[in-house]
Length: 122
Image (cartoon, rainbow, N blue to C red; front, side, top):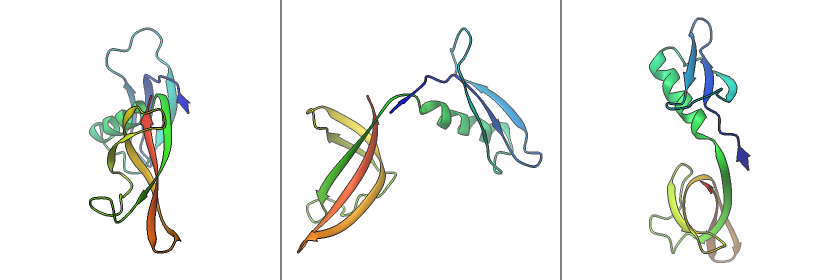
């Protein structure tokens, strides 16, 4: 999936948490505005800045790969969501991504497998 190259966002708290206007450093011209984010825990400029960094980082060409791996053959066993993973995609390109979901199944007895959804950028 492709996300536009957003350069600016408004981040807001709830019930008096404040409204913060955040822009990507070094952006010039008329910045592309991402839709506003509201969350009850946004209570200071430092918190708003961290949320803005996370939101503005989700730009460009996003790739999602599904990987099926045996659990017994993987060092550490089940790979949990949030893990940073380096892998080879279908086109033999090395990629680094973050595991977004993990599903464990036993379809072929006694082999226990894990199906990972990994998000990376192109």
